[in-house]
Every structure is written in structure tokens, then in C-alpha cells.
Image (cartoon, rainbow, N blue to C red; front, side, top):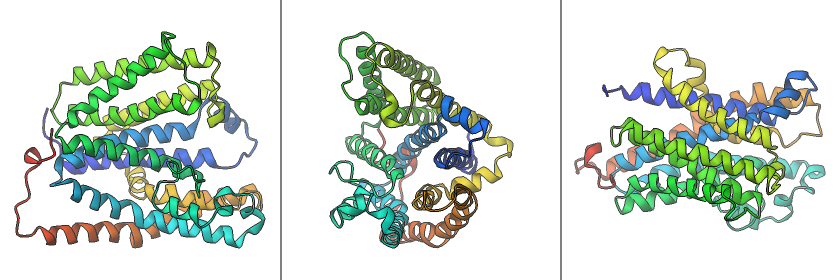
Length: 359
């Protein structure tokens, strides 16, 4: 495969992030009663498309980062500065806004159990400690954190290639379910293999793109995963009658949204060199801030008109997100880069192929 400029690769990933976060924001906006919006709500889950695309990007990026870092300590150091400053700012902003809106705050479980819930959220452990989330969008960050831990453990033992084995494991779980050998007793358990399998698909794709495994092997892995997922979805929805509506994803939008999430990732990746995604690249660069800020803009929903919420989502959110990226996210990450490079200035950085975590 011919070498590719890093800028092209990163720009393609940013464009995917831009589409993903836009779809998430549109999904969370209030209903305007227009036919197109009703159709999208009934037939396509826009938010799921975005989440699946995000998870694929994370699988790709985290695997690449682990292969190119000097140590796990360095990896987690950069991740902490990449995620936590903006995350903590959004948590403080959401908590402060709830304090100013008692008519809403009293009905929010997170607010009624302070300060324990705030501490759990600050550590990104709310789901594991069974504490309410400050913002509904935080749930995906818990999945991201678990994937970081799994990938880090494999990297520690130089077994990153075993992410493919975990992908096959997720496929195996769905195959056993499709064959009727066991049933998912809760819809949450049904979603877990698909979410983590999607991270593993992103990781496997990175390894194929990087020349570490043949593309035909990757295509075989994703074909098996998608086929077993569809079979398990069919059995759970129409045989076991495990309704996915408890996670706000009715059966048809669930499968359509998942398929379109994959199509979004691979479609934009295939077109990344055509230079048509400048706006999406910009949005992708600030996507983490947009993801966190848009949840804050939804807090006053019900107190102000729907058109005001849309104004907050489509106008205020991008503006605030650009400012938070410019003055919070970017400086924090640059600080982590400078501080670590200064600490290791006297040592020679290993080439990617010589990384001690590559496996």
C-alpha cells in the first residue's frame, strides 16, 4: 500500500467526527413536528449513527496511539489532558446551571444526590458506581474508558493484535444467542457486544490499513461480526421479544442506524483525499467540545421554546465549543505534549515500528 501523509489520515478522521457529532446534536434536538423529522425519528436513529462512527474512530485512533507511544504512562498522561479539562468544565457548567434552575434540578437524580454523584462523574466512573449521570451524553465516555483499559492491558503484554480475537468473541456471543443457546435477559447486555465489537472493528481496520494484517482478514472479521449481530438482533427482537425501546432505539432504527454508522465511517474514509470536507474537518476538530457543550444547552428544555433550544444547539453550541477548544482543550493537550517531551528530552523517541507496546 502506498504511504499516506499523516495529515490526510487525521483529516479523514476529523471529517468523520464532524458528521458524527452533527448527527448526535440533531438527534437530541426537540421535535418540530415536520414530516422529515418524524420520518427520521421513526425509521433512522441519527444519534446511533454518530455514536457508532465515534466508536470506530476511537478504535482506530487508540490502537494507533498505543502503538506509537513510549509507555502506558505516557499514553494515559496524554489521554487525561485530552479528555479531563474540558470534561470537568462541562461538569461544573452543568451543575452550576442546575443550581440556577431549581424547577428542573429537583427532578434530576444527579442533582439530588450531590456531592457523591459529582465525584463519581468527575472520575468518569458514574456508570460503574451506579450513580446518575450529570448529562445524558456522558454514557459513551464510560464505554470509551473501558476500551482504553482493555487496549492498554493488551498493549502492556504486547498483544494488541488480540483485539481481533475479542472481536471474534463478540461475534461468538451473538452467534450463540442467534442459535438459541442463551438469551439476553436485559437489553443493556444485548448492546454491550456490539458497542465493544465496534471499537475492535476500528482497531482491526487500523491494523489492516497499517499493513499489519491483510485486508481480506479484516473483511472476513467484519463480515462475521455484522452477520452474527443481525441474526442476534432478529432473534432478540422477534423471537425472544427483547424490546430495544428501553434504550430509546426501536428495532428498525437500531439496525438501520448501526449500518449507517459503519457506512459513514468507511464512506468518508474512502473519500478523505478529495478535499471536500473542510467544514466537517473543522467541526470534527472541536467535536469533543460540541459533544459536551450540546448536553448543557439541553438542560433548560421545557422552560424555553423549542426554537430557542435549536438556536442554542445550532448557533451557540458551535461558538462556545470553538472557544472551549481554543482556550481549554488545545492548551491542555499542548501542555501535556510539552511537559512529556521535556521530561524525555534526553532520550531518543522510538520509531513507531519500535514502540515497546507494539504487538
